[in-house]
Image (cartoon, rainbow, N blue to C red; front, side):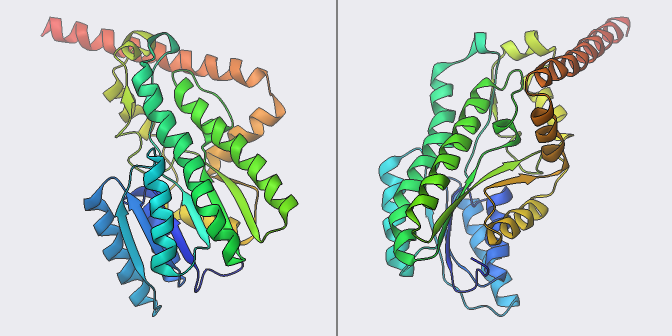
Amino acid sequence: MKSFNGKVAAITGAASGMGRTLALQLAREGASLSLSDVDTTGLAETVSLAQAAADKAKKSIKITSQKLDVSDKDGVYAWADKTAADHGKVNLIFNNAGVAYATPVTAIDYEKFEWIVGINFWGVVYGSKAFLPYLIKSGEGHIINTSSLFGLCAQPTQSCYNATKFAVRGFTESLRQELDMMDCGVSATSVHPGGIKTAIARKSKGEPALEEFMGTTHEDGKDFFEKFFITSAEKAADIILTAVKKDKRRILVGPDAIALDAMVRALPEKYQAIIVSQIKKIRDKQIARKKRKAAEKLAA
């Protein structure tokens, strides 16, 4: 797929972040859009911005939108059917919606674990399967599934998130191989963003046990992690769409994703010890800072 002009793209998680920037870029390139998210306010803003982007680029496109929880299988299938009915065809599905949940394994809440699996993994599976028949029918289709840097390397307190993103990677790579064998005009790509400047950390869930394990509250942890979000959502969208045109199997987004992927490849076992060493240093600094602030408060 060398051009998106005249194509129809469906995007989950389109109310903000990468989902929004993907929508805006595709609109500029002449792709009609079917957008979904649970955030209807943000979704409406994306629709308006995408239409303005298309108008400025002098592209005539159609945009539809729908409130959707991607963990709802029937809802995803109904959205796929409606997208095809509204637009006449579908060429691309970006299974982009995602959430985060941080906790030590000892403190995992099963309800929250099921919540993140439902969105991050089952949402990708439902979206891929629901849209695949329409992509095949179009004769020129592509499935773009968002995994993560944490689908390439594991991190302490991220076991639930890691599990979903490693699963997306495995599912998508297997799907890509099957599509290659089918020779049906459809391809699939696994996307692995590093730290992208979106609201995923701010909206993440966490357990109180994080404070004991890491020496910081979940809220403070959000502030800490956001310091490492170095790639803009606009840059991420550009990297993804360029790679889709080149039919890449795997997309690394951001210098941090490239660097850590290289480390895991070079040191498939030792990388874990390196990460543990670095995280311990961070934890020790956080605990020391917390004690210092407590002491200063008592002195005052």
